[in-house]
Length: 335
DNA sequence: AAGAAGCGCAACCGCAGCAAG
DNA sequence: CCTTGCTGCGGTTGCGCTTCT
Image (cartoon, rainbow, N blue to C red; front, top):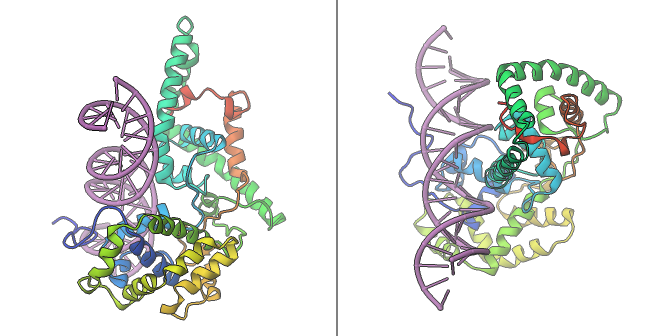
Protein backbone atom coordinates (compact mmCIF):
# COMPACT_ATOMS: atom_id res chain seq x y z
CA UNK A 1 0.00 0.00 0.00
CA UNK A 2 1.56 3.22 -1.11
CA UNK A 3 1.63 6.35 0.90
CA UNK A 4 -1.33 8.61 0.27
CA UNK A 5 -0.61 11.91 -1.40
CA UNK A 6 0.26 14.90 0.74
CA UNK A 7 -3.09 16.37 -0.06
CA UNK A 8 -6.31 15.37 -1.68
CA UNK A 9 -5.90 15.69 -5.39
CA UNK A 10 -9.55 16.49 -5.76
CA UNK A 11 -10.36 20.17 -5.46
CA UNK A 12 -6.76 21.22 -5.09
CA UNK A 13 -5.96 24.26 -7.11
CA UNK A 14 -2.80 24.38 -9.17
CA UNK A 15 -0.99 27.01 -11.11
CA UNK A 16 -0.10 30.59 -10.33
CA UNK A 17 -1.13 32.10 -7.05
CA UNK A 18 -3.55 34.99 -6.99
CA UNK A 19 -2.99 38.06 -4.80
CA UNK A 20 -5.94 37.03 -2.66
CA UNK A 21 -4.39 33.67 -1.98
CA UNK A 22 -1.10 35.33 -1.15
CA UNK A 23 -2.76 37.68 1.27
CA UNK A 24 -4.61 34.86 2.93
CA UNK A 25 -1.45 32.87 3.26
CA UNK A 26 0.64 35.74 4.56
CA UNK A 27 -2.04 36.76 6.98
CA UNK A 28 -2.30 33.25 8.29
CA UNK A 29 1.43 32.89 8.68
CA UNK A 30 1.60 36.26 10.30
CA UNK A 31 -0.85 35.01 12.85
CA UNK A 32 0.42 31.51 13.38
CA UNK A 33 3.95 31.55 12.08
CA UNK A 34 5.26 29.25 9.38
CA UNK A 35 5.22 25.54 9.94
CA UNK A 36 2.44 23.01 10.32
CA UNK A 37 1.82 23.40 6.65
CA UNK A 38 -0.58 20.55 6.69
CA UNK A 39 -3.00 22.71 8.63
CA UNK A 40 -2.66 25.77 6.44
CA UNK A 41 -5.10 24.81 3.67
CA UNK A 42 -7.65 23.60 6.17
CA UNK A 43 -7.45 26.63 8.40
CA UNK A 44 -7.35 29.20 5.66
CA UNK A 45 -9.71 27.64 3.19
CA UNK A 46 -7.06 27.86 0.52
CA UNK A 47 -7.59 25.27 -2.15
CA UNK A 48 -3.91 24.53 -2.23
CA UNK A 49 -1.95 21.63 -0.96
CA UNK A 50 0.34 22.14 1.98
CA UNK A 51 3.43 21.81 -0.13
CA UNK A 52 2.24 24.49 -2.45
CA UNK A 53 1.65 26.81 0.49
CA UNK A 54 5.07 26.18 1.91
CA UNK A 55 6.69 26.68 -1.47
CA UNK A 56 4.84 29.88 -2.08
CA UNK A 57 5.90 31.19 1.28
CA UNK A 58 9.53 30.18 1.10
CA UNK A 59 10.09 31.16 -2.50
CA UNK A 60 8.06 34.28 -2.78
CA UNK A 61 6.38 35.66 0.29
CA UNK A 62 8.75 35.19 3.14
CA UNK A 63 10.67 38.14 4.52
CA UNK A 64 13.96 39.25 3.17
CA UNK A 65 13.77 37.92 -0.34
CA UNK A 66 15.63 39.90 -2.91
CA UNK A 67 14.48 39.53 -6.46
CA UNK A 68 15.92 40.64 -9.72
CA UNK A 69 19.39 40.53 -11.11
CA UNK A 70 22.12 38.71 -9.31
CA UNK A 71 25.14 40.78 -8.49
CA UNK A 72 28.56 39.75 -9.64
CA UNK A 73 29.43 38.86 -6.09
CA UNK A 74 26.39 36.67 -5.71
CA UNK A 75 27.14 35.01 -8.99
CA UNK A 76 30.65 34.18 -7.94
CA UNK A 77 29.50 32.96 -4.58
CA UNK A 78 27.09 30.60 -6.29
CA UNK A 79 29.69 29.30 -8.67
CA UNK A 80 32.13 28.73 -5.89
CA UNK A 81 29.65 27.16 -3.54
CA UNK A 82 28.28 24.97 -6.28
CA UNK A 83 31.77 23.72 -6.91
CA UNK A 84 32.21 23.02 -3.23
CA UNK A 85 28.81 21.69 -2.33
CA UNK A 86 27.38 20.43 -5.57
CA UNK A 87 23.74 20.93 -6.36
CA UNK A 88 22.78 21.46 -2.75
CA UNK A 89 20.79 24.52 -3.49
CA UNK A 90 19.36 24.88 -0.03
CA UNK A 91 22.84 24.87 1.45
CA UNK A 92 24.03 27.34 -1.14
CA UNK A 93 21.01 29.51 -0.53
CA UNK A 94 21.85 29.68 3.12
CA UNK A 95 24.94 31.62 2.16
CA UNK A 96 22.89 34.02 0.11
CA UNK A 97 20.12 34.72 2.58
CA UNK A 98 18.30 37.11 0.32
CA UNK A 99 17.96 34.49 -2.38
CA UNK A 100 15.84 31.38 -2.39
CA UNK A 101 17.16 28.00 -3.34
CA UNK A 102 14.72 27.97 -6.20
CA UNK A 103 16.05 31.28 -7.45
CA UNK A 104 19.61 30.12 -7.21
CA UNK A 105 18.77 26.85 -8.89
CA UNK A 106 17.02 28.67 -11.69
CA UNK A 107 19.86 31.11 -12.08
CA UNK A 108 22.35 28.30 -12.17
CA UNK A 109 20.41 26.34 -14.74
CA UNK A 110 19.64 29.26 -16.98
CA UNK A 111 22.75 31.38 -16.71
CA UNK A 112 25.70 30.00 -14.87
CA UNK A 113 25.72 26.50 -16.27
CA UNK A 114 25.82 27.83 -19.79
CA UNK A 115 28.39 30.39 -18.82
CA UNK A 116 30.64 27.74 -17.34
CA UNK A 117 30.14 25.41 -20.26
CA UNK A 118 31.12 28.22 -22.54
CA UNK A 119 34.12 28.93 -20.39
CA UNK A 120 34.97 25.27 -20.34
CA UNK A 121 34.79 25.11 -24.10
CA UNK A 122 36.97 28.17 -24.30
CA UNK A 123 39.54 26.73 -21.94
CA UNK A 124 39.70 23.45 -23.79
CA UNK A 125 40.22 25.23 -27.05
CA UNK A 126 42.77 27.53 -25.55
CA UNK A 127 44.75 24.71 -23.97
CA UNK A 128 44.64 22.32 -26.84
CA UNK A 129 48.31 21.44 -26.55
CA UNK A 130 48.66 21.23 -22.84
CA UNK A 131 45.49 19.74 -21.55
CA UNK A 132 46.78 20.39 -18.08
CA UNK A 133 44.37 23.03 -16.91
CA UNK A 134 41.03 21.41 -17.40
CA UNK A 135 41.95 17.79 -17.72
CA UNK A 136 44.21 17.76 -14.74
CA UNK A 137 41.59 19.39 -12.65
CA UNK A 138 39.03 16.95 -13.90
CA UNK A 139 41.37 14.11 -13.03
CA UNK A 140 41.86 15.73 -9.72
CA UNK A 141 38.14 15.83 -9.28
CA UNK A 142 37.86 12.20 -10.20
CA UNK A 143 40.46 11.26 -7.68
CA UNK A 144 38.59 13.13 -5.02
CA UNK A 145 35.51 11.14 -4.41
CA UNK A 146 32.45 12.75 -2.96
CA UNK A 147 32.96 10.82 0.23
CA UNK A 148 36.44 12.17 0.66
CA UNK A 149 35.24 15.69 0.15
CA UNK A 150 32.44 15.28 2.57
CA UNK A 151 34.72 13.79 5.18
CA UNK A 152 37.07 16.67 4.74
CA UNK A 153 34.28 19.15 5.03
CA UNK A 154 33.04 17.50 8.15
CA UNK A 155 36.47 17.40 9.71
CA UNK A 156 37.19 20.99 8.98
CA UNK A 157 33.79 22.05 10.12
CA UNK A 158 34.77 21.15 13.65
CA UNK A 159 37.60 23.60 13.44
CA UNK A 160 35.33 26.20 11.99
CA UNK A 161 32.73 25.50 14.61
CA UNK A 162 35.23 26.03 17.38
CA UNK A 163 36.39 29.27 15.86
CA UNK A 164 32.86 30.47 15.41
CA UNK A 165 31.83 29.58 18.93
CA UNK A 166 34.86 31.38 20.27
CA UNK A 167 34.09 34.40 18.20
CA UNK A 168 30.48 34.47 19.28
CA UNK A 169 31.31 34.11 22.91
CA UNK A 170 33.68 37.02 22.62
CA UNK A 171 31.42 39.28 20.67
CA UNK A 172 27.73 38.58 20.75
CA UNK A 173 27.02 41.52 18.55
CA UNK A 174 29.52 40.40 16.03
CA UNK A 175 28.97 39.52 12.43
CA UNK A 176 25.62 38.06 11.63
CA UNK A 177 25.86 34.42 10.83
CA UNK A 178 24.12 32.71 8.04
CA UNK A 179 21.35 30.20 8.58
CA UNK A 180 23.54 27.27 7.78
CA UNK A 181 25.76 28.26 10.61
CA UNK A 182 22.77 28.38 12.85
CA UNK A 183 21.77 24.92 11.78
CA UNK A 184 25.21 23.50 12.12
CA UNK A 185 26.15 25.10 15.34
CA UNK A 186 22.83 25.57 16.98
CA UNK A 187 23.56 29.20 17.58
CA UNK A 188 20.86 31.80 17.65
CA UNK A 189 21.85 34.70 15.45
CA UNK A 190 21.73 38.18 16.85
CA UNK A 191 19.16 39.92 14.81
CA UNK A 192 16.53 42.53 14.90
CA UNK A 193 12.97 41.46 15.31
CA UNK A 194 11.30 43.70 12.81
CA UNK A 195 12.13 41.66 9.77
CA UNK A 196 8.65 40.73 8.80
CA UNK A 197 8.12 44.02 7.08
CA UNK A 198 10.02 42.83 4.08
CA UNK A 199 7.35 40.33 3.31
CA UNK A 200 4.96 43.19 3.16
CA UNK A 201 7.20 44.47 0.45
CA UNK A 202 6.62 41.26 -1.39
CA UNK A 203 2.91 41.57 -0.88
CA UNK A 204 3.06 45.21 -1.84
CA UNK A 205 4.85 44.24 -4.99
CA UNK A 206 2.22 41.79 -6.02
CA UNK A 207 -0.56 44.13 -5.03
CA UNK A 208 1.07 46.79 -7.09
CA UNK A 209 0.95 44.48 -10.07
CA UNK A 210 -2.56 43.56 -9.20
CA UNK A 211 -3.69 47.15 -9.06
CA UNK A 212 -1.88 48.06 -12.22
CA UNK A 213 -3.30 45.11 -14.07
CA UNK A 214 -6.44 43.89 -12.37
CA UNK A 215 -6.76 40.28 -13.25
CA UNK A 216 -9.86 38.28 -13.84
CA UNK A 217 -8.77 36.20 -10.94
CA UNK A 218 -9.40 38.94 -8.47
CA UNK A 219 -12.93 39.59 -9.57
CA UNK A 220 -13.43 35.91 -10.00
CA UNK A 221 -12.29 35.21 -6.54
CA UNK A 222 -14.41 37.94 -5.05
CA UNK A 223 -17.47 36.73 -6.83
CA UNK A 224 -16.80 33.10 -6.20
CA UNK A 225 -16.70 33.76 -2.52
CA UNK A 226 -19.99 32.08 -1.94
CA UNK A 227 -18.96 28.98 -3.80
CA UNK A 228 -15.58 28.69 -2.15
CA UNK A 229 -15.57 26.64 1.01
CA UNK A 230 -13.56 29.26 2.76
CA UNK A 231 -13.42 29.62 6.44
CA UNK A 232 -14.48 32.84 8.05
CA UNK A 233 -10.81 33.60 8.30
CA UNK A 234 -10.22 33.79 4.58
CA UNK A 235 -13.56 35.38 3.93
CA UNK A 236 -12.70 38.15 6.27
CA UNK A 237 -9.38 38.61 4.66
CA UNK A 238 -10.88 38.76 1.20
CA UNK A 239 -13.62 41.09 2.29
CA UNK A 240 -11.14 43.26 4.00
CA UNK A 241 -9.01 43.33 0.93
CA UNK A 242 -11.84 44.02 -1.44
CA UNK A 243 -13.27 46.72 0.69
CA UNK A 244 -9.97 48.37 1.36
CA UNK A 245 -8.03 48.59 -1.82
CA UNK A 246 -6.83 51.93 -0.54
CA UNK A 247 -5.22 50.19 2.33
CA UNK A 248 -3.02 48.30 -0.03
CA UNK A 249 -2.14 51.48 -1.84
CA UNK A 250 -1.14 52.99 1.43
CA UNK A 251 0.89 49.93 2.12
CA UNK A 252 2.77 50.31 -1.08
CA UNK A 253 3.51 53.93 -0.59
CA UNK A 254 4.83 53.56 2.90
CA UNK A 255 8.45 54.41 2.60
CA UNK A 256 9.90 53.26 5.84
CA UNK A 257 10.13 49.68 6.84
CA UNK A 258 8.63 50.25 10.23
CA UNK A 259 5.76 52.16 8.77
CA UNK A 260 5.12 49.42 6.28
CA UNK A 261 5.18 46.86 8.99
CA UNK A 262 2.72 48.74 11.11
CA UNK A 263 0.53 49.51 8.16
CA UNK A 264 0.44 45.94 7.10
CA UNK A 265 -0.31 44.72 10.53
CA UNK A 266 -3.19 47.08 10.87
CA UNK A 267 -4.17 46.23 7.34
CA UNK A 268 -5.23 42.79 8.31
CA UNK A 269 -5.58 43.11 11.99
CA UNK A 270 -9.32 43.47 11.69
CA UNK A 271 -9.53 39.75 11.71
CA UNK A 272 -7.75 39.19 14.90
CA UNK A 273 -6.41 40.97 17.86
CA UNK A 274 -2.98 40.16 16.70
CA UNK A 275 -0.62 43.02 17.31
CA UNK A 276 2.88 43.69 16.16
CA UNK A 277 4.29 42.94 19.55
CA UNK A 278 2.43 39.68 19.64
CA UNK A 279 3.74 38.86 16.25
CA UNK A 280 7.21 39.73 17.30
CA UNK A 281 6.61 37.45 20.21
CA UNK A 282 6.45 34.65 17.74
CA UNK A 283 9.98 35.49 16.85
CA UNK A 284 12.90 34.81 18.99
CA UNK A 285 15.89 36.80 17.85
CA UNK A 286 14.59 36.75 14.37
CA UNK A 287 13.69 33.09 14.20
CA UNK A 288 10.24 31.76 14.29
CA UNK A 289 9.91 29.78 17.45
CA UNK A 290 8.97 26.67 15.60
CA UNK A 291 12.56 26.51 14.54
CA UNK A 292 11.85 26.99 10.89
CA UNK A 293 14.52 28.45 8.76
CA UNK A 294 12.62 31.60 8.05
CA UNK A 295 14.96 33.58 10.13
CA UNK A 296 16.56 35.23 7.24
CA UNK A 297 17.25 38.87 7.39
CA UNK A 298 17.16 41.53 4.87
CA UNK A 299 20.33 43.01 6.14
CA UNK A 300 23.47 42.59 4.14
CA UNK A 301 25.13 39.54 5.53
CA UNK A 302 28.85 39.80 5.94
CA UNK A 303 30.90 36.68 5.43
CA UNK A 304 30.56 34.39 8.35
CA UNK A 305 33.54 32.57 9.68
CA UNK A 306 32.43 29.48 7.91
CA UNK A 307 32.16 31.33 4.65
CA UNK A 308 35.62 32.71 5.18
CA UNK A 309 36.78 29.25 5.92
CA UNK A 310 35.22 27.97 2.73
CA UNK A 311 36.91 30.65 0.76
CA UNK A 312 40.21 30.13 2.49
CA UNK A 313 39.83 26.46 1.87
CA UNK A 314 39.43 27.08 -1.80
CA UNK A 315 42.42 29.34 -1.75
CA UNK A 316 44.45 26.68 -0.01
CA UNK A 317 43.69 24.32 -2.84
CA UNK A 318 45.85 26.44 -5.05
CA UNK A 319 43.26 28.59 -6.65
CA UNK A 320 45.28 31.75 -6.66
CA UNK A 321 44.02 32.74 -3.29
CA UNK A 322 41.02 34.45 -4.80
CA UNK A 323 38.06 32.35 -5.58
CA UNK A 324 36.71 35.07 -7.77
CA UNK A 325 39.42 34.34 -10.27
CA UNK A 326 39.66 30.66 -9.79
CA UNK A 327 39.46 28.13 -12.53
CA UNK A 328 35.91 27.02 -12.18
CA UNK A 329 35.98 24.52 -14.95
CA UNK A 330 37.65 21.81 -13.00
CA UNK A 331 35.81 22.30 -9.79
CA UNK A 332 32.36 22.22 -11.27
CA UNK A 333 32.26 18.47 -11.43
CA UNK A 334 33.96 17.68 -8.20
CA UNK A 335 30.91 15.97 -6.89
C1' DA B 1 3.40 42.08 -38.72
C1' DA B 2 3.33 37.33 -37.65
C1' DG B 3 5.12 33.11 -36.37
C1' DA B 4 9.06 30.52 -34.35
C1' DA B 5 12.48 29.93 -31.12
C1' DG B 6 14.60 30.92 -26.91
C1' DC B 7 14.60 32.28 -22.23
C1' DG B 8 13.29 32.97 -17.41
C1' DC B 9 10.74 31.85 -13.67
C1' DA B 10 7.03 30.00 -10.80
C1' DA B 11 5.25 25.92 -9.54
C1' DC B 12 4.76 20.84 -9.43
C1' DC B 13 6.37 16.14 -8.53
C1' DG B 14 8.64 12.53 -6.34
C1' DC B 15 11.90 11.11 -3.13
C1' DA B 16 14.50 11.25 1.26
C1' DG B 17 15.05 12.43 5.98
C1' DC B 18 13.25 12.84 10.32
C1' DA B 19 10.29 12.58 14.31
C1' DA B 20 6.44 10.79 16.76
C1' DG B 21 3.69 7.01 18.11
C1' DC C 1 12.45 -1.49 15.71
C1' DC C 2 8.76 -0.48 12.57
C1' DT C 3 5.20 2.34 10.61
C1' DT C 4 3.21 6.56 9.49
C1' DG C 5 2.94 11.29 8.40
C1' DC C 6 5.08 15.76 7.67
C1' DT C 7 8.55 18.64 5.88
C1' DG C 8 12.30 19.87 2.94
C1' DC C 9 15.00 19.33 -1.16
C1' DG C 10 16.32 18.82 -5.95
C1' DG C 11 14.87 17.84 -10.58
C1' DT C 12 11.73 18.94 -13.93
C1' DT C 13 7.91 21.03 -16.37
C1' DG C 14 4.96 24.40 -18.35
C1' DC C 15 3.64 28.92 -19.29
C1' DG C 16 4.28 33.65 -20.42
C1' DC C 17 7.31 37.00 -22.18
C1' DT C 18 10.96 38.55 -25.25
C1' DT C 19 13.81 38.28 -29.17
C1' DC C 20 14.74 36.70 -33.66
C1' DT C 21 13.69 35.61 -38.48
